[in-house]
Length: 238
Image (tube, helix red, strand yellow):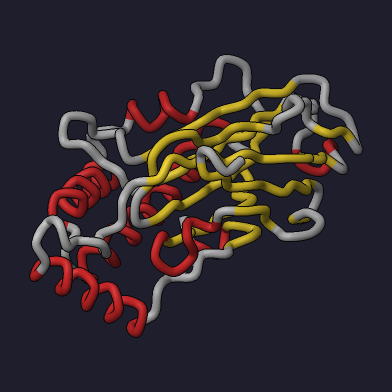
């Protein structure tokens, strides 16, 4: 899967000056005592919720109006004893959706992530025609856990979590997150036969403060026959 296949791609890979800044902060961190240490980022408890998801035309994409929305959030906090600890896949299914319908997500929206994040927060959203008895995204990824793509991402993320002292490892981890999102897109396309990569983005802890807030600030993202907005909330601030 290529990046061009995501209809909305707001990923902004950090430039060389940003990576240099991170390198300097990591270097300063290594010379400080634990009591003096302040720059190493600490995990934050975050929630990501999709809101006002509107389907404007079911015929163009979904045919029988039975659809699924899959979300993958890669949050950078990996543990060695759980190879899937650094990402959260979610699948939501909807029946009987008609033109101009708002998806029934409840008063608080569709919760696609809740947990700790560190260094970055990558979000991938796809919409598909739902096939009967199709596996959810978590199952699809688990079935492919031994694939080179997922094993490469797992090794990179666990290694990054263990050292996280060089800008080069930071950039490699971002690349692994992107590769995992594209792999999930590919797995969904194979399982459903009709998957649309609607949205992807990457929020950095240093540069973006994880993107905490509403996106977009006003109105909704709208592409083809779907529109939505989302919010990233820090626990205790929402």
